[in-house]
Length: 397
Image (cartoon, rainbow, N blue to C red; front, side, top):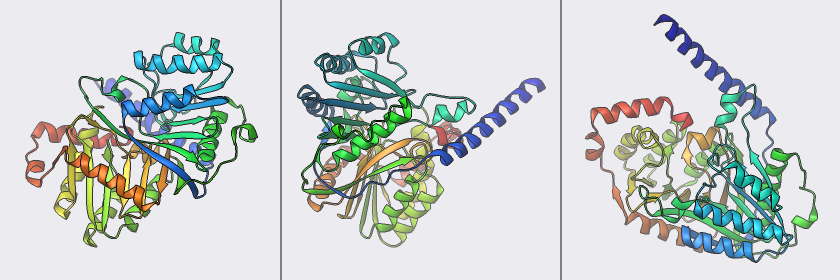
């Protein structure tokens, strides 16, 4: 028994040292890209069928290049249709590059990747685990979702590729997400981010290749991309909360903000900001729901409104500050996005667009139930036990 305890202790110490020194090395090596304000035309896509329809149509109409980065591409028939389309375009002579996160897309079969390569698709995994810090590199994921077509049309947001994003998972049901389709100046920044990630994964440097950066006319909406590497996202979130004067809306599938952001939310309530937080009723991963609940009690007591979306699964990553700023992207409101993942968010400053997003969020709230403090206090002892466990591992959920 003593030997088993000693082995467990050594293992835990190794994990902590691996993570500490791995992250230290990671932070020394990153160089975050600051993108300027741009003018783009932006379409909001909130239903999987519509997202796939627009994405597939744009890919089919491509004439030069298709650059795709997803966190998840599943091993199912819907993913097969997507991959086959990329293969068809590569066979037509279009330059197709597909970059997938190593862990997020681990279910994709090796033979499918081999078949894609034979058809002319350039493929690579992003963030492969590496020694000596194997635990940290397994945890630090590329969570971005970027598609750039001919350097002229771009996509980013919450959708991945697989049947659940079309509402076909019997457990999760309907899937609500927020994804952006861009045309205009901002597309060059999506292209730049993809090529930086491609360079990191493959050592092929295409960032200076002008063919991938055609000229753009200005769109109507002012926006700016924020690219983070597990370091500066917390600072952005804190600045958004401090900026709020009247209303703050936070939509996220995973609400695990940590103490500093939690304290800032409570400060915002004390100065009179109305705060609404929407999360899913269901969970798609173990412990993520349990890790959120310890934060809810103080927030509800302070006057925050917590809504649980019950009409399927809620995967939106949205922050709205008054009617001054809207943040839509790939980052969740959790410790993994804050301290581990590579993320990409789009800040939008157009009042009419923000009003439309707020209206959409309010419609989602009509399919939600408000979590009261009475319901919060009625959690069972086993539930609270799971929450304690979830809190201990919340950094890695």
